[in-house]
Image (tube, rainbow, N blue to C red):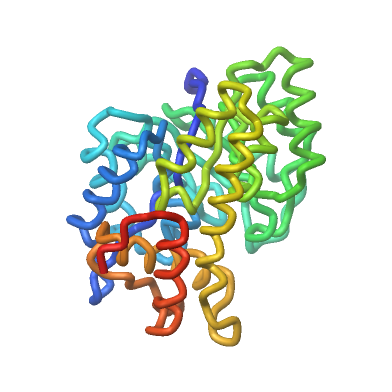
Amino acid sequence: MATPTTYTGVIPPVVTPLADDGSVDRGSLERLVQHLLDGGVDGLFALGSSGETVFLTDAQRDEALDVIVHTTAGAVPVLAGCIEPTTPRVLERVRAAERLGAEASVVTAPFYAIVGPYEIERHLRAVAAASSLPVLAYDIPVCVGRKLPLDLLLRLAAEGVLAGVKDSSGDDVAFRQLRLGLDEQDDNGFALLTGHELVVDGMLLAGASGSVPGLGNVDPAGYTRLHQLAGKQDWAGARAEQERLGRLFRIVDAADPATAAGATRGVGAFKCALHLLGVIDSPAVSLPMRRFDEAETGRVREQLELAGLDVRR
């Protein structure tokens, strides 16, 4: 097992820019990474949900991770999503992450096959035992069908099997109980990262060590300011910045709900915004998602302008 490392601050889940033919747009991805670094982020989460990892081929994943690691050039840690339905497939992705220079891997519970706590524990232990990288658990029951149990996370944290959790469960009660349990175990180096991007201020107040906001692709500086204000205990200022970001998050509501569900609304909105900001060349998304149409793009542009961002297109 790898020695745990503390991951804190703003760690956006990097989107994967695509060319219109579906290939990874290396130039746009390099600009996006620089945009995030310029925004003051503390780390990058490659190949997560916002990075379209489940839509990409292994070759595309490898290419995207390679670009992110090399463009970052050690400025901040790069965490690599190793998201597959079964343990052997996850281990293949972990080996790729090791080879390509990621600093840690991020792993969900197994999915598609029906599993329980026993199988989930075996899965996480097997990944950690076979990896030279610290392992963070990705708690996202909406996608894998089961929430990671509190007792399991505390046990694996105490034993050093896990270096952290990226919590996208939306279960704030369980989040708080996990924080309390970690404090009681003196697991102060354990990374407790929230993916609940609309209430980052509240999660920081509850003891989160960092956030993984998809909207951070669009406005990394905003989330950096939010974290800095929280670090100064300026909770009124943090709330004001969070509310501005909450209004900006309305870009996901620009999509027509009749033809756009979760992935299209989220990834599609982030890519549309990044295209309008001049960061990426195309708002193309993976099949079966679709890019935003002209009317939807106009609504995204309006929200970007209201948020005070520099619209280039």
